[in-house]
Image (tube, rainbow, N blue to C red; front, side, top):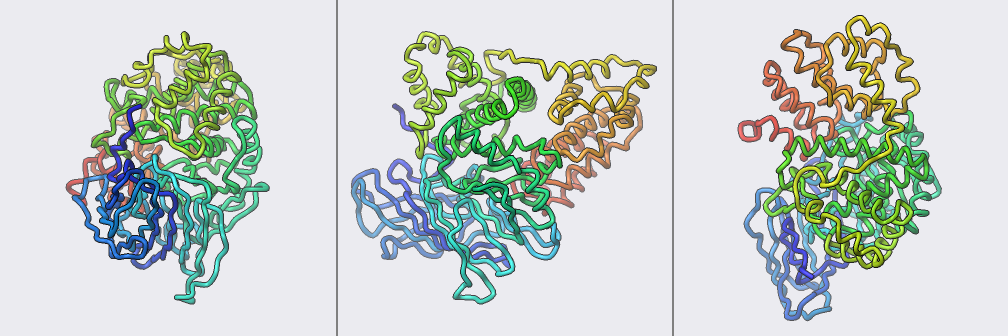
Length: 621
């Protein structure tokens, strides 16, 4: 079997592997840095080892020691997005199987890509600062010198010193707190993660946080202004956990907490073990977006317990997680609902492929990431192309119950380790040894290594979608004199996902006449809907309006588009809105100015990608 090499990491993962981290972190809000010392317990995988390499990014390294002895170190050439290799020369030679404790004393940069420092004004409480990390995919190296590759998994223990008026939480189980003996104005919080994880799952949040119990093993954390709302929104967490356990086995992480982050968090959720991150855009008030939590819960098995070996095999994390998320929905809702979600996912995949381009190699299920920024490569492809592939296999081998038997067995076999597509495929053939002839007929190259849409179009149950299609067709076919026939009764019986789907369908039609869009707002009052997923679809309709504005000279939609692009920082919403506003020539400069005005409040990943779209990176540093 060909060994997997991670093109996104400099670390010497073929020669040695980290087994444990011991972290001592001092969070400095005045300087916007973390001063740290990390002790890495490293096991040698080869004989005659006298050096090793760690990943870093914008870190100041002041001292390195190996088993208590001073070790020589040097930073290599800085790469534009992968950081800088830290070359460490050991003062002795080690053999295969031997361990060394490497201590690195360091300080992060105020511009560390893993960390966002928020001023009091950027928080809900407006009185104290806030910090959160986001290490996926390759940003942990800007917070901790480490082997920043998913093929290396380790446990960790952490002690975090923060101002005593603030609370620290991590993607780990809390192990108590105490006054900082070095500074009476600070508190040290302790954490332990006893299950081996890759570096990208290390997470830290510091702020004025409160918690509420939402289950026997779950709390929700946030600022007090949102905590009760969050507790209501995520009250079904334990039910989802139990359903997932019924499908794929015991939850091994102990605690399952959720922290609702400030609006600048760039993603819907992040599956940090023991502490799922959630965007406040999920607080819809009707639990309609809790499917994101089902996705993050599913990651406890697919991604966190069994992990991709490199980011080129990211679909193993996300495709399986979407598949398991929808199996949870199947158990809690219905098979029709799973099919309905699959239809929506297929449309997301089509939109992504159209955006990237049909021949773009980043739309491969297993892309090459050599000299590719993982942030720029991020898309729905591993999620939805991965799900579509697994659903295709499900149909070939005998249905969801049969295929879930494989998924559960795969998780049990590779638990606590990392896996490549080749290893996954080999086990698929082993598990379905009586169906090898069927599996051999699969267009493996078409699915894995070919850009664009998959070689097979799955057929899904349209029962729940047909209602959305019918309403969409009514609007598309309506003449001016028909507009009076629409009323709020049209959408009262639709679930939030169905309303979202109805709006998405309209986007794949020719732009609606301005009169129709105005009438839709009159009868459905979509601009006032709190559910941000639905508002996103409304904003997508607003994009259609933008194309009509020059011709119709109706520009009332533009301020609303700017508002949503800047009042929250979820990448899924912010980046496409800015892109559309920039493409509207009359407002191009205003889009640039608005971005520059709000850039400091954005997450570093969001700001970098929007800057690239608006072509302001070079001239406005």
